[in-house]
Image (tube, rainbow, N blue to C red; front, side, top):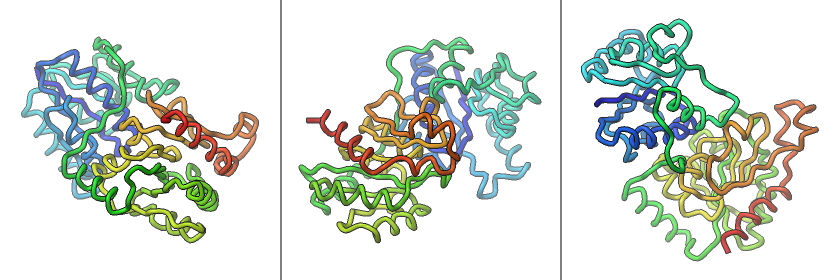
Length: 331
């Protein structure tokens, strides 16, 4: 049996939310060939996933956005003659590719304009956690959910070696390390640099080492934080790819982040997470089946304040206490 799973969302979190579904499909069809079609930007997240046989990636930023590239991709997919095509991304692009895949059975999410190609045609349940939404879709297709499902991301030996080298170079052995991701795809999901700097100094004065992560787009934020600190943190921002990031985060005692992709990478490594939430809902996008604490403004502020300002109501003192509550559980 040949199965294709489609999720073209380029967000780190959304692809990691699908990883429990990959495991469930593998459990249901242990002898099947299971391929996945994903965005090139997040390909590394699945590169070593043991439940997948092949990755087909699509890069709409580099010459694949046009209609000709789409139909080349569809032609390639048709060659494999999939028995089952499961679309977990209800976009026009993903719906079109699934509808024209020539799969023997096509099912899952789709825009209404393509619903006639899908059996069953499903609508995303946005009232539950995104990972549970994908698992629910599988149940509706007839694939039962078995066992304790978690986010999964594997990495290679080279990434592990880089993480080990970073630990040695910074003398992190036998130290308590708190990793921090300061960025997010929306400015309203980011915590203030001033708060991050204050928290960093509070923890480093206690002897806890702070390590700042993030991609190239986060460098400016981290530089501002560092300029406000009395004790300089270690900065790895913009220096790691996704595989290396996972390997280094795995070594941290606690990981601090807003609603962001690296937060979900930490969850995939079962690293305890302090998650800061303002404009988005932790019930839908929060840490999934892993040790964590969610900190958000109280209900009165959530109900009455401008969403763009909600993160300002989370104080360094609250986050300091949250980090220590997770550290105590490790003693």
